[in-house]
Image (cartoon, rainbow, N blue to C red; front, side, top):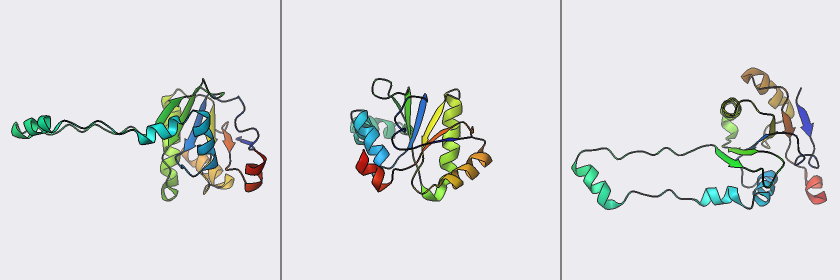
Length: 157
């Protein structure tokens, strides 16, 4: 059974892996960005180096296709120095593709050898929807869940 944490418990110790949906307007995204010394924003602003035009010209001349370097998603941040967790993973979220979001969580969780998990639920997902999706996707039922804070909880923090 999932454990629902309120806003005052959300940053307490207890889970190794924290998963956060990518939403820069979310209060949790902003708070965790602040607590990690803006490492989330730093990653957003990072631009990949481009190949020098001279090298591109040589590749074209030799009929060699320009290599495609895949973008890395999701963002994995080691946070033990700032938060009571080992890892924070920022996963892209699209309200129209909630199942894809949950499949990404499951894949990440398995790749990291199934650590204890805390999930900051995106605003459109209700607790009931989460439980339905969780059961259908095979996610563990021992997840700590954190809902988006209400306006009242935001003013108390």
